[in-house]
Amino acid sequence: MPHPDFDAKAFLTSVTTRPGVYIMHDETSDVLYVGKAKNLKNRLSSYFRARGLNNKTVALVSKIHHIDVTVTHSETEALLLEQTLIKKYRPPYNILLIDGKSYPYLYLSTEHRAPGIFLHRGSRKKRGRYFGPFPNTYAVRESLTVLQRAFQLRDCQDSVFDQRRRPCMQYQIKRCTAPCVNKISDADYQATVADAIDFLEGRNQALFERLEAKMQDKVAALKFEEAATIRDQILYLRKVQEDQNVAGKQGEVDVFALEFQPHGACLHWLMVRKGRVVGSRSFFPKIGLHDDKSELFGQFIGQFYLASERPDLPDEIITASEVADASDIEDAIFELHQKRIAIRHSVRKERARWQELAQTNAQEQLAMHLAKKETMAGRFVALQQALKLERLPQRLECFDISHTMGEETKASCVVFTPDGPDKRQYRQMNITGITGGDDYAAMAQAIERRIKRLQKEDRPLPDLLVVDGGKGQMNQTIAQLETLGVRNQVRLLAIAKGVTRKPGFETLYLDTPTVEIMLPGHSPALHLIQHIRDESHRFAISGHRKARDQKRSQSLLEQIPGVGPARRKAIIRHFGSVHGLKGASLREIERVEGVSSKLAEQIYQYINSH
Image (tube, rainbow, N blue to C red; front, top):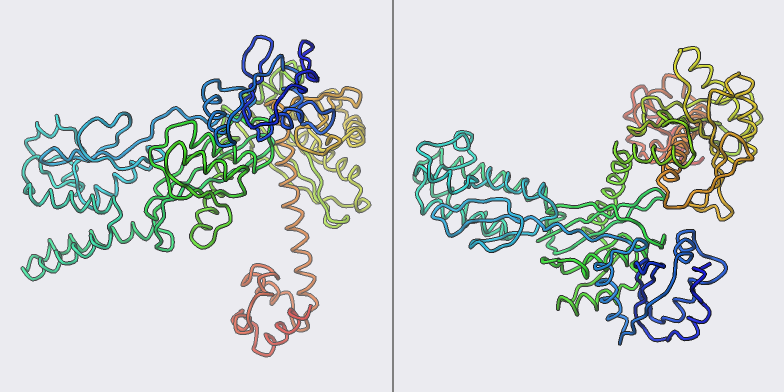
């Protein structure tokens, strides 16, 4: 329900059906949310429906005191205005991706008689050549290392250069030709600068041809040491080119991947220039109302190109999935920057590899971000406050059960501390002696074994024991803790999926099924609980699958005539699994130690017929 002072029904009767932008305010007139719409009446009406709203939208609507509307001529104009207003007001319910930092460049002081190459950030008023921008300073420093090794350009400031009387250490380790003390002529140094510029601008083939001709001239003049130096330079530059290019193709591309989880999100930007990956950058935005990937990408891309400075626009934008309102964003970018940029998500060949690389980076970066000490510590504090715990918990243990129709039941126990997941203390347990599929009995056995092990080793019990399940699982756990005599020594938290079974709608039970807690979807405490729950689930499934596959593999191999324990072991050692064996050729099977041609034929026929 909206704020009592806001008459939503009366407001909606007067709203236009034309495109435009709406600004939602609270009772103090602070901006809550800025949005755009093709049809303002339809879009705004969707906020005040009785059903189908996620918890973030419900929270937003409850705070709305009044709404301002601005009509525009087109959807493109609405998109541009929306991004301008988001940048201006930074509303709490919008996705916030704005990054105020200026981007770093490589700066070549070409006005100096011996140009130096430096990292530069800020205004580009000094005379010289600028190369970039780069996504981060790491990418610039990496390029500086390449340039120093390949071209031996100086990186000292002019004040140091003017005072030198003898070569510095950079000259000794062959990272500089020491133009400061005339170890190289000005003409030769300028020629080297020209080579470096060609390399930075992607004219590699012309550069290699020139260097090879220069090397041959040195050989003809019997200057073999100088020829060898040029040879090494060519080999190094070719290796750099090989490492940085993907399939040797050219491209001016920005690649975006989004890893979105209930407890956090990462947008990863991969920057490709002249067919070369020049760097990347990760953003961890505050997620707004949308949890649909296409909507999130639409918000991200819109802010990235329309609400902040982008001096080096690509020819193409590649995303990991479809972008909502992609054509509108393309039109808005053209109107703002006078450059037509295509947005694509279905790509092949080298672009698909860039896309895959960006997605992998997004996953890895989000995992590292969530595991950071400061992030995890803050969530532990939020958990203490949300659950009203007397002291800050120092150790959480979460249990989960995994099986397939009762087969190979595994229990997992994962441990979190304020420093993050403590994987050294993770444990997996084989659950035996129960009826297949009885999760209650499996959980009881897992907790009994865990508590007894901690007591036997004289180790502290967890401050909070977390189980993935509702009231039934909690009752079973309480009974087990009472049997073990530790009911009053361990706080218990059970996580039940909500009616929609979507993340953010979980119901929590603390210590008893009668104490029910609902945390908002944006709560850091809930994010911590979701994180440990998901991690225990992942760990249980991985252990179960490994045990199940191993059992099935052994069972299939045991059925092959003539294959005993020694040969089964040799086959698994050679192929890793039955899955690897199934994809093997007859000739490859013959290479297994102890397997004759005749037996290899039998194995091949049996495996491919089952």
